[in-house]
Length: 385
Ligand SMILES: Cc1cc2nc3c(=O)[nH]c(=O)nc-3n(C[C@H](O)[C@H](O)[C@H](O)COP(=O)(O)OP(=O)(O)OC[C@H]3O[C@@H](n4cnc5c(N)ncnc54)[C@H](O)[C@@H]3O)c2cc1C
Image 1: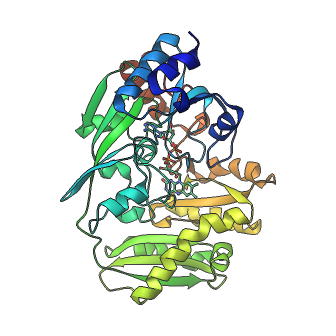
Image 2: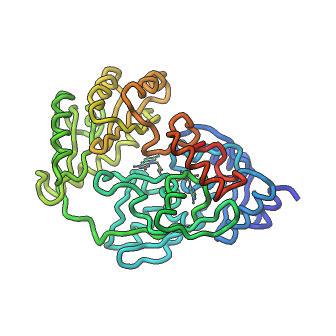
Image 3: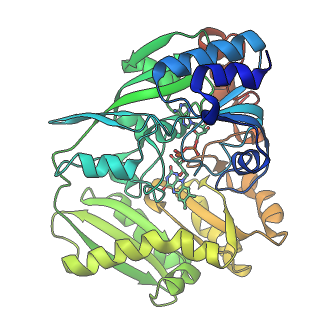
């Protein structure tokens, strides 16, 4: 029996496709890089996922789990069978302090289901991204300085591994799946921690004409225990959002230290959330996710400004996103400079097959974990290692 017929036997005829259009759609993600999807399977239960994995094991074909495909390069298949988990999309249980959801549930739906409680990791892609994709990418939200990333908010994750075992991971074992970009197993559901509600906050927006002045303030703010989030906009991004064409720091404070009224603060955050889309409209689509040593930030931003490359990001964490145009060669030139600034790539979007960005220690760890969870190397071949 052919591979496609075998998968049809598991998930039904309409839930498998090797059609040209489907393969084209699934050969890429939000980064628009191109890979090859061999065929696509849409299981709708854990049992079907288990059977799909066992079939891939027998046939020795690579499989790549996929959520909403909003990844910026880490959900590009490499001739894999793409296992789209979007049919496992239920929010299973909400209680005080916790929510359980299937891996394909969109964050937006989870936000609605939890009512007045609050899930603190809210990436800009939250309208589409799924819980499984967020866990596998160890996603960070817009307010990352205060709330950290997914790893801080996952209580349990259930996976189907490459041996076909359905495992509930807790505590330290969660590290075997969080941020592993689907290379150790398919996440089928998770229990996440919730906050009762977001504490009272206020914001101030500070404008600067020079990088030196901004850096001085940034250092001061980093020492301020009430400053919970510090977000950077360069002059290009500021202007795009309708603010004065200056460098800006948006500072969110615990309590009422910030000087903007509540409605103004809401406007600032919602403008900020439009930024990736506005940049995209201007063909600035190639965003890099860089962690920079604090002392390198002004020098790096200075170089970007000379060539009008827009840049923004949670600078309080040392993270910035320069966003290159798709159609010019600046990106290559700047990427050549990253090492000299001590920048690390992959802090937000993961590494995917950008192997040169994976720290050696992580690659070693992934190999060890794969030997345990995926000895036949079925999952996401060539990612991270
Ligand atoms: C406009 C825009 C804004 C963004 N903003 C942010 C942001 O603020 N913060 C941030 O962290 N990221 C951001 N991203 C990147 C992306 O949205 C996140 O990484 C998101 O968590 C991916 O979720 P997804 O469901 O789309 O996963 P996908 O793109 O489908 O997959 C992402 C990775 O997870 C793996 N995966 C998916 N589902 C599973 C599963 N069930 N089991 C195992 N592995 C799985 C895939 O193999 C892949 O490696 C942004 C992207 C865009 C396009």
